[in-house]
Image (tube, rainbow, N blue to C red; front, side, top):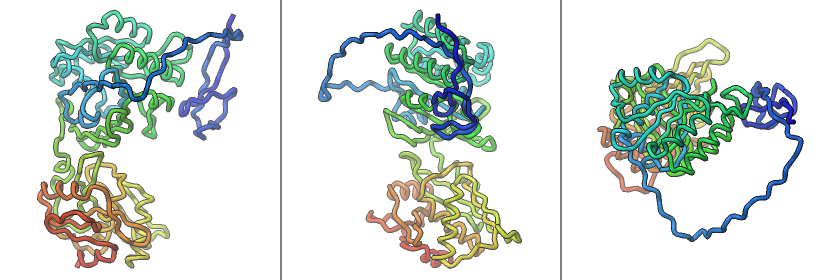
Length: 447
């Protein structure tokens, strides 16, 4: 007979340890190891496998036809639509709109002829129906069940396989398998239930959408192997203080990564924002010092955002450096370059930097816009009206070229910007373009 044993599994990386410790030896995470129960099978039975037919790389391949959803922003993030037999994971903070987006998607696809099944493990069916009524969604074609046992769910799908093309699981952390004695949400349960769902969906050509919880650090809860198993991993981002949400692709086997879709949260659900640049630039006063406009690229989409800087005197030995929506270390580097290469010493001043609208920027091309905003705030002089900035700044003070400058300039001109300040490039000049090769040349712009 098999006896029950204890094992200790890391929630962060999934590694198994023989005893508990405060820190995982593999991923160095603290407080991530939890105790689980497992069955110890002493007798090992040799199983003989079957030979698999070898296939050639140059064989003919038929590309799957994507399912175009009525949500264009979701189509953009997915790379053109839903791919049959694909597994998609959507993560995000609580209340950000994950369930709302998937409920709107499943009901809209049902109305267009695709048969969907919504499986909820966190709410009752009546709660989901009430939310659908509040959002004004037509659910006459939708099917819904409330279940958490993975074997019951697979048996239900198998019984109605001909009537199901897409399955939504909300959420994977609530699913459990009776083969494991651990609680739902643990590493072994998430790994086992996700594997069974993905294997069944691929074998039966069903589109699978999973909702994933996130930790307090913003990472997807559960083992990292969960993201490796999925075809597409999407993050739903947004600041609760703002009314818009950003859907970002972190991994996509059928399209480009780092693509974003922008939505606006309203009382009737999520609405698409076809021109996010106008959303991030609305109610902007051009006569205020310390503000600049950055022409960025998110995936394949150009976006204009406002960079705001504030310089305040300080009596503290170490003045504060506060950043919202950007990297703090990057700001320290820009301040050091301005002090050494430009001559602007802010050692006795507090520096506050914010990306307006709550958007998070990771692109190095924002360096020039940040430097211009800091110089404008320090001199109390506004930047030229209808001007945009983009360019990467090196430690020697040089301004380097960035990717896709033509796309950035076209987006700026579409929104009425006429003065472009950027690094030197070999493109055909469009409108009034000022190229800078060193940050000292910004003095001529602030005269």
